[in-house]
Length: 82
Image (tube, rainbow, N blue to C red; front, side, top):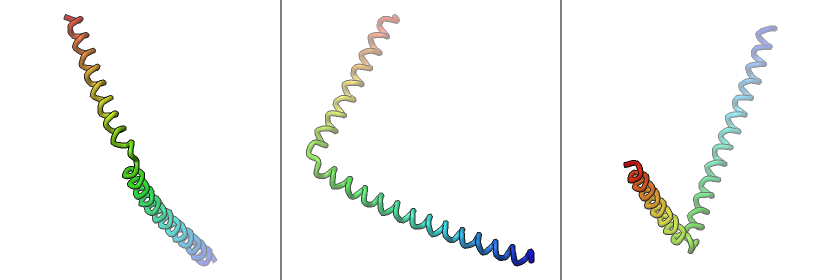
């Protein structure tokens, strides 16, 4: 009696594990498909966006001004400390 119960329970657990593995595999495949679709859409958007190069240049220019401002503040503070 006990053996039959354990055999039946093991069968249920095995079926649950197989179901979970199949579900996990399908989720993994759908995630891969979504990432590939997102990447292809991102490429399309980046290639067709006429303002993107300007935006990148503006960001670079902003960072250069921030760097110069930080350097100026540092030099000013250094001169005040002396």
